[in-house]
Each structure stands twice: as C-alpha cells, then as structure tokens.
Image (cartoon, rainbow, N blue to C red):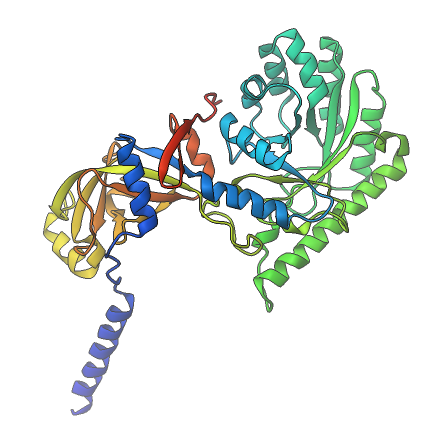
Amino acid sequence: MDLLPAALVIVLAVVVLVVALRRPRDLGGPIDPYFASLDAALKAASVGSPRVVIDLDRLDHNVDTILAGMGAGSAYRTVEKSLPSADLIRYIADRTGSRRLLVLHVPYLPSLLAELGPGWDVMIGKTVPIEAVAAVLDELPTDESVRVAREVRWLTSTEAGVEGFRGLAGNRGLRLRLAVELDVGLHRGGVGTEDELRTVLAAIASAPDQLEFAGYLGYDGHIPHAPAILRSSRSASLAAHRKAMARYAALVGVGRTADPSLHEGDLVHNAGGSGSYPLYGRGTPVDDVGIGGAVLRPSAYPALFLGDLQPAIWIASPVLADLGATRIPFLERFTALLRWWNPNARHALAVYGGGWPGRIVSPPGVETEAITNDPPNENLVPNQSLVTASERTQVAVGDFVFWRPVNSDAMVQFEDLVCVRGGKVVGTWSPIGRRY
C-alpha cells in the first residue's frame, strides 16, 4: 500500500520535470541596438508598410569576405535566383569586378539584358524546354538576339536537347553557345555517364554553324548537407566535395579525350557556391563559382564554410494594433492555458502582412501565432497577421517586427528594397518585375 503513493509521487515529479524542461522560456526584453537602429531608420524614412531591408554595410563585408576566401583561380559568378534585382546584381558586379551572371529563370533574361547593358558573360543555370528559349528570343529585338548569341551560354544534357538548339539556331540564323550539365552527385539532372557525354558532345560538334561548345556546369549544392555519420559535418562535406570534384574531373577528361578541338577557346567550368565557395579553384576542375544568397546570408545556408558572413537581409513589417491579452478565434476559453504555457504568447499584436518564409528575430519575445498562421489556417488573416509577444517585450503600434528570411528570393514579393547604410535609409532598389 505504501508503494502506490510513492509511485504517484514519482509520476508527478516526472510530469513536473517534463513540463519544466519543455515549457518555452520567456524571451522578452530590450530590443537589440542593431534592430533599434533599423527601426529608427525606417521610421525616419516614413516607411509604413512591409519592406525588404538590405544592410549595405553587411553586404559589403560579405562580398569582400567571399572574395578573400575564394580558392585561387576561381572566378566569381553572381547567381540571379537568390538576388533577383538588377540593381543588386549591378552593385555586386561593381564591388567584385566580375560581370559574370548565372540565370536560372530564363523569363528574367530579357529584362536583365536590358537593365544591365552589354558586356556580360551570362550562363543559364538549368536545362529548360526549347520553347522557353524560343520565347526569350521572340521577346528580343534582332540586335539583342545577336547579343544573346554572343553573351549567353545555354545549358543542355541530352542529344535531343542539342538538336532542339540546333534547329532553333538554324531557324533564327544564329550561332548559340551550349554548355553541358554534369551530374556530379546531386542527381537533379545532367549527364550521368561517359557514353552520354560523348553523345552530347558529338551532337554539338556536328553543327558548327549553329552551335558552339561553351563549357560545363556541375552543380554540387548537396555538399554542405552531407549526412555526418561517425564523423563531423565538416569532414562529411569535405569528403562529398572530393567525390564530386573527382567525378567532375573524370567527365571533363572524357570529353577532352573524345574531342580535343571542341575543348579549346573560351570555356567555363562552373560549380558551387554559396554554401561551399572556398573549396574551388586550383586543384579542382572548377574555375567559375556561382555565388548567390551568401552575400545576404539568409537562414537557409549551412554555416560550415561561410566564415563570418553576416545576415544582411530582413523583412520588416509595422505593428498595426496592440490587441492586449492573446485570444484565438474559436478557442477563446483555452487561450488562458496557452498564455500560461508559453510566456511569449501572452500578448497579441497585429502586423501588416505576413506569411513570409522566415523567422521573427526582433523584437525579442515576438513569435508567429502558430494556430492561426500554420496550415490549413495560414490565410485566416493574410493581410494582418497575428503575432504574440512576451509581456516583457518592448513593442508598440508603429514599431517594426523583423523577420530573417529563409531565402533571399523573398525579395520578389515586394515592390522595392530599402537600402540602409550607417543606420540610415540611403535609397531603394527594385526587384525584377517579371515573374513567369
């Protein structure tokens, strides 16, 4: 009989311990001076709706850090996907001295060519249907089509793809440049065998009046994500990189042996980048490294090889209303339990917009209200999202809430990008206006 109370005591003790360990801690407190300065800068510039904010001081630091850390012999190529703004691309080109561009979304190409002007080396970063290539050429005036033939390296990985480019070039009276995509371990496309590579190269060589061989692309974005089994994440990633580079070198060697004359002239050997940019250059087959979002350091990139790159992009949204104690529609009678459980859910605020992929980073103690914002209820209040806050959080109507986006691609959702330097708004940039 004496064992029962003892067992209950043990069970209760375990429950209390679990509650104590699992219960969120109160994250509220003073706002970090960095975000306080961003908040003040936006208010001084009379910003009153959601914006992407780009910290130019941090952007400069990141670009310079990447340039200093890149392997010797590797050229910097800006990736459009993570930096979809001609203004931003031009800024990075000026700072790096590189006018190399990797474009993954070909409908962007006409506007990028128009806004950036001539003199770029543009590589298309994925294979696309020949109809998409034709649509780009249809959109361009004749002189710009000639420029595309001169400046753009299209991508292919099959004999049928080569034939599509051959027919398109012949019909347009153009000579198009073709690079070959290699599968070096990501298994998301590309030539996978030596025989496939020989076939593709032979198809390019058979049409010298319509096609020019322009190099290789072997994207290896899987490297920083290598599973660490019985070793460190860094060791696993370095081993994956060595394997990918060995595969890249072997395929290029097969290509050179198959047709040495095809491998002369202006070729690039592209791979990489943002998550692994220091690993290329001499000693690898790669001489051209694609670098995109690393210069803004959103949250998606593993930190293994990024050094001291700093987050330089934020989504800022003003608080529209102070709603007092948190109340959730249809669950009002249970909200008191939520407020007890999570001290960061005791106070409710309405912010302008929401639903962006990212994590709230300021003010401290502010969180997305999960029940009304997670699927399937994420569109319950899409134009004024409910967020919650600790009672210790210092935030009022008109103050800004800051998200760190998962990817810098988020900027395409906004009309303009606010540039901040030295704690002041110094201008705005525009994202690429075209979508699909």
